Length: 165
Image 1 (spheres, rainbow, N blue to C red):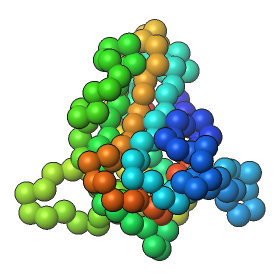
Image 2 (image 1 turned 90 degrees about the vertical axis):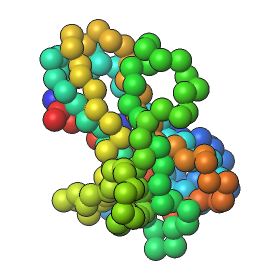
Image 3 (image 1 turned 180 degrees about the horizontal axis):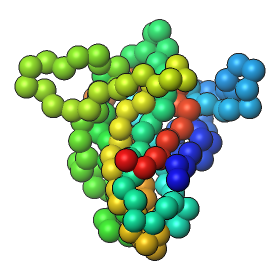
């Protein structure tokens, strides 16, 4: 059993400020997306209650997005998936590197790269979790970039795809 969290269901830092994010609809569709106009702190979070998912199943969470032609400062970020009840909030250092706009890493560089989807969007894996009995509460999936103080722009967020491994 897969699950989908659309852009409006996500917690996106500064998303309510039209100077930083624009809310648009995909052409000929009722799907709403969030387009990053300008922020220096990128933080995108999604939460889902494990009771909505199949029991005894391993899941992966993927951020689904596109990049505009003039995207800036979106080379990499930190991705994480955690059970909300297990860790205190504010552990920003936890997670692993994902490459958002970078097509190829330098030798010795470690991280997860984006992949094209069949629907012409891109996805990057935010992490994995195991849903035992569906009684673990919420799982939070997150992408953030706050180490680079430069202004970022040009990512269009469609949502988070949560699917069995």
